[in-house]
Structures are given as C-alpha cells and as structure tokens.
Image 1 (cartoon, rainbow, N blue to C red):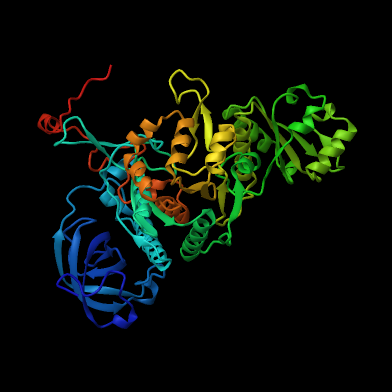
Image 2 (image 1 turned 45 degrees about the vertical axis):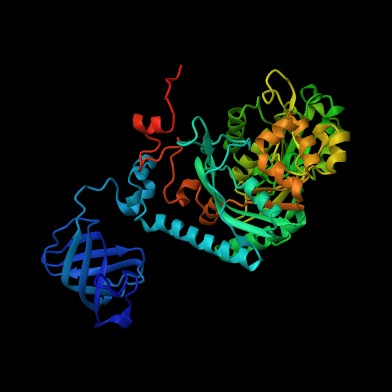
Length: 583
C-alpha cells in the first residue's frame, strides 16, 4: 500500500503465509517470554500478533511499523477469537514511529468501565477501544444509508446556514456576537425549520439534509446538550400521510438493515395523543411493554370507596403477577413513593378466582363481577390502581406501567415504532405571558397547521383545537417531531394571536417567512428523525453520548477541548461584549 503498510492489522489470513508484509499500528499488549516478545498490534481493522526476537523498547500504545514474514501459528496457540488468529508475523524490522511516554489513565479495552470524566478528558484514547469505535463506525454507515435512501426517494440534499437569527422555537438559543454589527447577535439554529420552509416556497419539491441542531438544553440519557443531528426532510404539496409514507420506508429499512431484531411492519400504528396519554401515560409509549392503562374513574364513581370517588383513577392489570414474591410488591410500593404517589393499591385474583386486597371490602358482589369482566381478570392476575389529580394521574400511571414492565421482564426484544398524532395545538401556561394566569401557549411547533384551518381558530375553544402535528416513537424514545406546516399568512396571524402575539410580533420575529408567504407558498409538510437516537437504539446503548465521537458531558462541557472557556479581553472588545458578575 505504502511505506507504512502493505496490509492492515485485520487483513492477514492463512493464504498470506510465507509473504513478507509491513504493518503499522498501536501496541495493544506486550508479553515478554524471555528472549521472545509477543506483541498484539492493533489498528482500526483488527489485531495481529507480532513475534519479536529482541527486547521491545517502547510501552503499550506506542505506534510502530513492523516488517516481517507471515507464519502459521502452532495449533495450541491459535486464537479463535481473532480473525487473524491462525497466523502471526515474525518481525524482521521494527520502527518506533511514536512512543507513548505517559502512563495510561485506563486500559484501552476497559475504557467503557472508566468514569465518564476520565474518558472524556482522554477521548482520543477512549476512541481507540474497538467497542467504542464500533458505535462511531455504525453511525457513519447509518448516515450513508440514510443519504442513499433519501436520494432514491427523490429528495435533494441542501445545506442550510449555521449562523442565523434568533427565533422563539421552544429552547434557549446559542448566541454568537457580531464583530461588525455592534450589539447584535447571530444564533445557532435550533433546527433548520424556517430555512426548509423557505426552500419549499423557493420551489424545491423534496429537500433533506443530515442537519446539525443547537439547543441550550439540559442533558438527558437520550439528549445531548448543545448539539445533535437529525435527518431533516420537507415535502411540497404533501400531507401527513405522505410524510408517514417516507418515514415508514426509511426508518423500517434502517432498523432492518442494521439490526437482527424484529421491526414493526409498515404502516406503523397511529395513536392519538389523547389515547397515548390514557393507555400508556406518556406521548412516548414503549410498545414492547404489553401492559395497557385503563380508565377506571367511572367504575369508582358509584363505589363506596371514598378516596377514589372524586379524582381520576387508572388501573393496570399485570397478568400472573400474583405469583411474584413479596419483595416484588415491596419494590413497586417503594417506586410509587419515590415518584410522588401516596401509595400503590392493588387487588389480586386468587386461585379460587376470588379477589383479595384492602379495596375489595368496599366493592359489592356486583361490582366485583363487573371488575373481573371489564378488566378480563384471571387467576393470579394483579390489578394495580393509580389515583391522583387530573394533571398528574396519567404521568404517574405511565411510570408505574414502565416499572411493572421492567420488574416483570415482559418487554420483548424488538423495535416497535408508532406515530403519535392529533396533538393539541395549544395548552395553558401560567408562565407564558407575565401576569396572565392560565395564558395560552403553543404545545408543539408554532409553525404547524391547525386542523380545521382558520375556521377552527375563529370558532373553537383554543384548548380543543388539534394540530397537524405528529411524533414518531421507537421503544419509548421520541425519534422525531414533524407537522403539516402553516403556509397561509392569515392563519399564521390568528394562530399566533391566540398565543399572545400580535401581527407586528409575527412580522418582526419571523420576517423571512412572513414575507415569503405573501409570494405564493405551497402546502408542505415534513419531519426530522434524530440520527443520534437512531444509532443509540441500534447499538443498545443507554446513553446517547456513547454514539457521538466527541460528546459534551452532562454539564454541557467539552472536557477534551476545555469548552466553554474564558477568552481574552481583546476578543471580548472586538465583539462589543462586557462580562458582568452574577448578582
């Protein structure tokens, strides 16, 4: 290949025996057997054993180039775990290209077991671990697959700006001060939302890109602070079903291609937001969990159990859970208290099909019969109850459902995808407008088209208006949000007016869209599945930082590059910034 190598460290097989080869890489392990030294030499492609008949004068992780002959290993030394395990290279010449002069902060092969702070400070070492590299290489393959797939569906890749203007899109902006324009700032885009809509107005029929998005948000297991990437796409003259067709095609194929697990067939399930909140206690349901939440409010409305009479009640039937040991019920109670519940009531179905539990004595025979029939209760089933105020009961029931699924180990090993549809356009917020208790705010994307259009905005209670908004969810992880966009100025004015904005506010905050929509805008729709989250699901990692080459920590710090960092007074002066002390 060149002076450094004729082959990679993962390439040699028995057919290369007798050849003289040159390899370059890192020393993964060094074993001195008294006159004979065995080196494991590693590069991106694999490991080859090197036999050296002299003292090796460098430490582990030094970079070396070895020239020698390929020989068959003795039968008792063949390493079945390595693809190169049947051969070894007997070194005739070795060049130390670069010595590792510092002691290692962790063993490369054990880096994933090291504290995250140490890993991220030495990310270049962490990335040498083949287990870590595997995620990064998979990410690259997935990105390439997505690009090819979108091109095959007639989409055109277009890059949108990274320096843009600040706009209220739901999260805090990252601001960039301008040197040339005193007191003014650019913002990094939270998403290419406005630009992709402008592309539709520009006559681009099908746009896509793997877009960087920047949001000053707190980290979560499935959310990286600061920067993330999404497969952003938009379609002109398209409705919700058109977008779903593309998403089902692309996402089904990407999960099927890069995993051996079963994948939901298309069309994916459509679940309304209201149904999802009631049946699963979340708008991000994990459909691998077969448990379903039932509304039992009406059942208890005329029962004699006073605590459940005037508040919403939810029930979850856990099949066969009566066979669980006492510790199972103790763990469930502890979890319920941990999430803010006052307790966790339940009724068990005994071997004789009689019901057992503190609540049973408040239910007459007719009520008990109705309960068995309505909940399809059978021998050894346990019915758990969640009762609380209307704002929290569904959330609590969802957490209990998830915990039951985990404790009972009943979630299948697959990729279960669904669309959540019919989101409410607006919700109440006491904080949205200063001094206006119960003010109305957008609950999702403010650029979405309301179902029913202008007529709905003019005639309906805002809290009853649904939007053409949708999410796609996989295994309890929100992969994407999207919407049929609002492309009509008169609808935009009314929609923002309900949320407390004037026409002047709209013109000022969204001047490009406002102007463009007066020159003829086509109906358009789109969505943006998250690349990071897709790869996280495919790899089975529990933290999204494991699939990002250079992630920030949970405190939004880049420990490798020491960012954010202080800058000089001269740099601040150039962009007209003065740093003030916090009060």
